[in-house]
Amino acid sequence: MRIEVVRPSGMTIADQAAWSSLQHADPALDSPFLSPHWAEAVERAQRRDRGEVMVAVVRDAGQARGFFPVRLTGPTAMAAGAPMNDYQALVADPGVRLDARRLVEALGVQRLDFSFMLSDQATFAPHMRGQARSYVLNLEAGYEAYAGQRRLDGSGLVKDLDRRRRKAERETGGVVFTAHSRSTTDFERLIGWKSAQMHATGQTDIFRTAWTVRLMRDLFARRDPDFGGVLFTLHMGGELAAAQFNLRGRRTIHAWIIAYNAEFEHYSPGLLLFQDIARWMDHMPFDQLDLGAGDYRFKHQLANAHRTVAHGFVGLPSPQSLLRQAQYGVREAAERLPLGRISALPGKAMRRLDQWRGLR
Image (cartoon, rainbow, N blue to C red; front, side):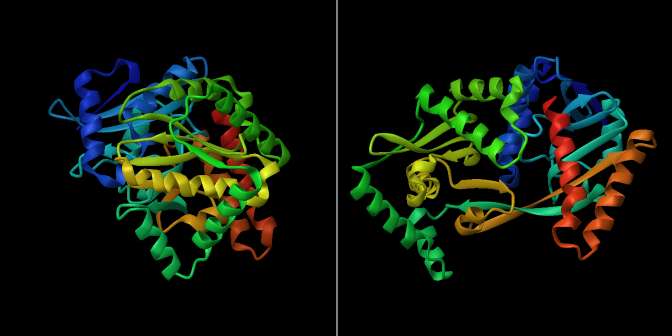
């Protein structure tokens, strides 16, 4: 097998079709972040002035059998679209067996970093340094079956949300859910809310980087049936109470940029919007609402399934690999110590640095 490295925009129609076919053949790969359209959208948004988005194409006897998109920045590679990207994987034929270091060599870098690699990826398993849970609403049996199972599991969430919805209806004059909203006003307000939320919680404001906003606006405008952005909104008494700008794949909606109006906080508008999206999916070709990784209370409340993602790196003998190895050494040593929040600080510092590298 040989590896060819091309830009997403330089891929042939046949290779794009092969990528989509491989993705659709494996339900575990049904994420919009693993689509060829994601790599193309990121390439357009970054405009080559922020490193280069490339795709490593694994070929066997001339046939494309695997695809792995990355962003190259100097001597390192990272996920295409990081830190806006929630999943990584080699989208490949099940028969492909590949040493991840061959990918690094073909990309012409010293090191490949990953943060949300699907944990069942054999190619990257030897290089994984830790794992996290990614939360999912499996809605294959429909919303009512999901709600019934949550009740049987002892969760009072559905009952509580129904009560809050009735209260909001009485006190605000009406609750209105909109799917596939085309309101640019609501879209821009969501970005403003999210930016303010990140400032208030001491997080890096991802929207201060021009390419992230270009990416979102491009996805908002897309009409491709198998990929793009979709805006969901919830209004109470005529006012925007919550909004989500999510990505859509073939059968998956991925919760992406979510925020709510603090004036309506006591009604839990964010959770009510999730409930409405889950009900809406009953009538659409989507059966999975992916909440992504992150140890947040609302994900524990909503999810009825999960998958595992891993972080780590693939390095060739080089200064960049030695540096990453040292960073992980400090992180892992701290995490073994019973120091509470202090033990998590090196890991948080690494994530913050990686986020900064992706945004610059």
